[in-house]
Image (cartoon, rainbow, N blue to C red; front, side, top):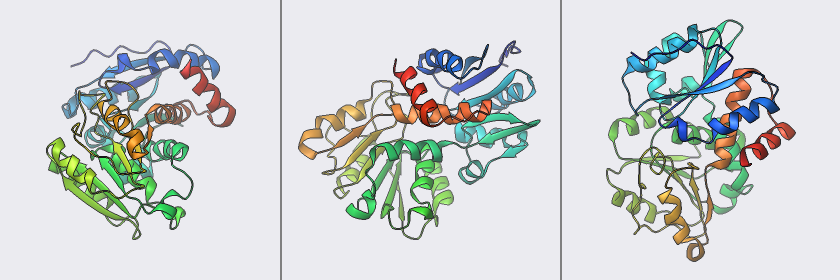
Length: 311
C-alpha cells in the first residue's frame, strides 16, 4: 500500500516512471504563475511499467476522493491504467473509449473524468513538422515502432476522414510482444479504407531493421517504444538503414535517445528530417493542464508557455 498524503493545496499529479527527472517538475510552477493558478503544485507518482492493477486503482481512487487533488497526466501506464480503473470514472471521453487508454484525469461538475489526449497532442506535434499534403504528394508509409498508446493515438490521428486523400497509404506497427500487437489490430482495423494496416511481430531489433529497410522513400519512422527514455537503447541496431528523403520522429525529448543518434548518423546521406519529442511534450502537457484546470491554452498563451518551458 502506498502512503498518499491528502493534498493541502490544488495539486495536479504526474503518473509515470521517472517523473522526478522530467522537465515539467521545474516548468509547471512557472506555468502555474503565468496562468494565474495561484498556490497550485505538481507531484509525481512513479510506477514500474505494467504494475499491479491494485497499485493503479489505489492512486486513482486517492485522486478521485481527495478534494484538492485536481487531476493527473498519465504517461507509459495509459493502457494499464484504463484496464485497471475504468469503472472508477463517471465519464470516459470517446478517444479513451476507442483506444482503451487514459492520459488525462480531471474533475468537472462533480464528475470524475478520463480522457485520451494523445490523438490531439500527437496530431499537433506532427503538423508542426510534416509538410502540408505530404502523404498525398509523396505516397510514403508510416512505421510505428511500438504498439503502445502513442502508436494507437497516432494511427487514429492519421486515419481521420477529414484528411480525405492526404493519408499514409500504409501504417506498419511493429512490436516485440504479441498481446499488445493483437490489441492494436483489434482497435485499429477498419478505421479508414484508404489506409492499409500491417501488424508485425519483431521480437528483436534486427527484425525492426528488416522492416525499416522495406520502407519506400518519403516515409515516416517513429520511435514509440519508450526505449531511450523509460529504458536504455533503441528499437533498431546501428546497422539499420533509414529510407531516403524521409521523416524520423523520436517522441522522447530526454534520455539517451539512441534512436535519434542513429538517424542523425544517416541524416546527410539519406536527406532525413529529424524531430525530437519537445513539441509533443509541450502539447501533451498543455492539453492536460487546460482540461484539468478548465482554462483555454492556445495562441499567445500556448506560445508563452512554450517559451517559459524552453527557458
